[in-house]
Image 1 (cartoon, rainbow, N blue to C red):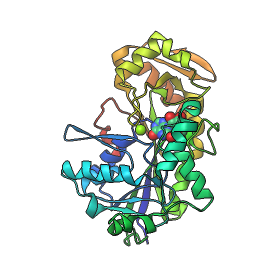
Image 2 (image 1 turned 180 degrees about the vertical axis):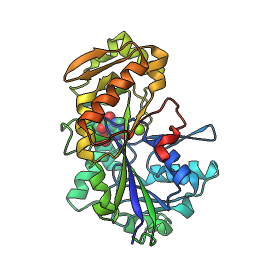
Image 3 (image 1 turned 90 degrees about the vertical axis):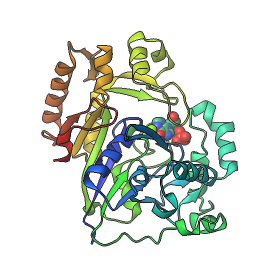
Length: 345
Ligand code: IMP
Ligand code: MG
């Protein structure tokens, strides 16, 4: 009954530039729905529309193209921030009251959830302090407030979704966070609380058989905003990594924190491609390495330097052609706004 589902997924620790991929795809391919299946206000998606920069945290970025947007039952929604985001979008000329729907069983984040996160988790774990973990805990206890009860009380009853996708729809799903922040595949407690992998998108109401393409989004270097023994604070003292971070403007969209930068971990990326079912691979921020003139990556746990951006790209393409089923479906982007044309063919 559906035409198909495409999924945009972050292959690293979040902040790979998924927002750009979603808005480019939706502009070129036109979907009937753009959906979120995980996370909440901890995410921050930056998109550029006609050269203007916009940010969303909870609302799918399809809202910028007047596409129906769905927030799924595996998401958590902060109603106070939702109202702020609705106002922000309306003031910018978009129409969330018409296009945004929230699954009736989506859990709502309470001020107590936020308080608990800020008091007990933010310092120790480096969470975003948005109340994510406490809300998912209450969801697991089946005592969280649900959208179906909460939204009507906020005069947002028209946003409760009827849980039907129109027949013959094309659906685009927008991942939040990424592979190594996933609660199953990551390294708890240094993860988020949701399932970030494409399979979890099926919670929106379709089968894995409906999935057409998984657009895996990677970056030419790795970053981590938040605590993680894999990314020690000492990384911040490295001049080369620091230069990449400053040039790439690597500060958290949600928290404003300086992200820790490391060279691309190709071993981790190969694993992420495999288990996520990525069918098209997009590398972002090649322009940042070009500007810095620093070309390095880890492969088989060794740090390998390259003379040029082209040499680094050739190496990556070769390893991926050998080690995955992706073939030539590997694309490099050097623009904050656009993807190479070949992605859409
Ligand atoms: P929480 O999701 O706020 O509980 O944070 C858990 C961990 O995930 C922290 O290390 C955060 O920095 C990280 N995190 C959560 N959301 C994002 C995101 O959208 N981008 C990057 N890191 C994130
Ligand atoms: Mg982000």
